Image 1: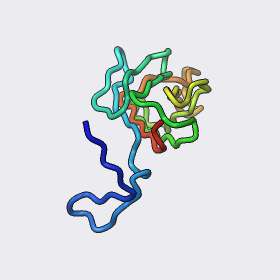
Image 2: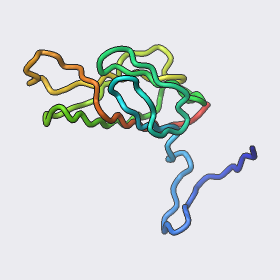
Image 3: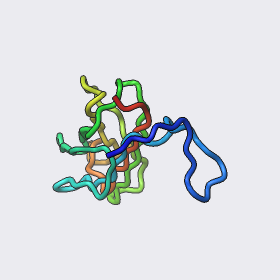
Image 4: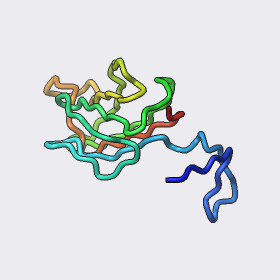
Length: 128
C-alpha cells in the first residue's frame, strides 16, 4: 500500500477543505446485545463484552497516546429514558478503549447498566 502525505483534504463535491488530522482515526457501529458484533468499522480490530453494558474495543493501528477524543452514542429500545456512555478506566488507552453504557438513574429495577441495541463510537486523534 502506498502512503500519500497531505496537510488538508477535500472530498469531491465539497467546497471546504479540512485538516487531515480532523478525520476519524477509528470508528465502530456494533450490536451490544447477545453476542456482540460489529456492523461496520474502521481501525477497530476486536470488540470485547466485559459484562452488561461494558465493552472494550481494540484498535488495529494504535493511537499515538491516550490524548484523543472519543464520541459515543447508543440506542436502547427497551426504554425511552436518557442513556449515556462513560469512559471506564483503562491502562492502555493508545491500543484499546473501554466504555460503560449507563441508563438514567430512574431505572425502576435498580440496574443502571444495560446492553444497547446499537453502540456507535468514533475516535479523533493521531495514530502512532
